[in-house]
Length: 195
Image (cartoon, rainbow, N blue to C red; front, side, top):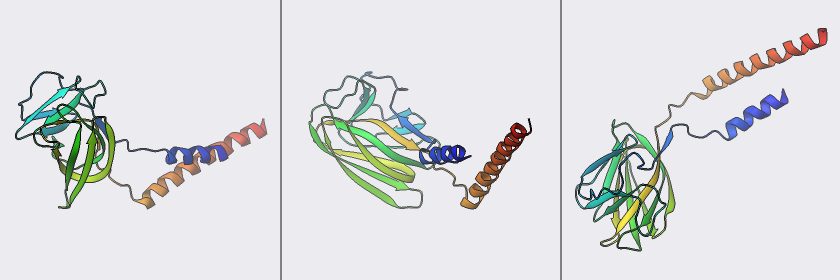
């Protein structure tokens, strides 16, 4: 019984957001030289860029992890879910690449309740992971201040808002399951004692 309770506690302690997914652009053809397109879709998210240059690359100088990454230059871009549902932005990797060794990137998140969140990143020519933990977003705008240089973006961790189960309901469900397991354990002990 003590092992069961300990295992349950351990399971809840290491529980993670099962709705999180990583946008790594592996579903987009890379190195196409399609620098002028204004939109692309990856992992259920729509990325749009009104002007400037961008492409999904694996061969960038500077920030490069050998896998597909979104390289953006001369301006910014925005992204949102293709179904227009709210989402969370947990983290992303960013680093300077073509024609620059650093600069800053500003991310602006627009929440469903009208709030606006902003974070400024300082990028170098190596990938860095940036943590946001922003929730209830409808869209995110990204703008770079790197002169005529490019910034590579990869491993954008996003999630869908989780519908919270009220605590009393969760407690009753857990309590009834635990009671059932205790009953099964006692029944087995009684069967062993009677044989």
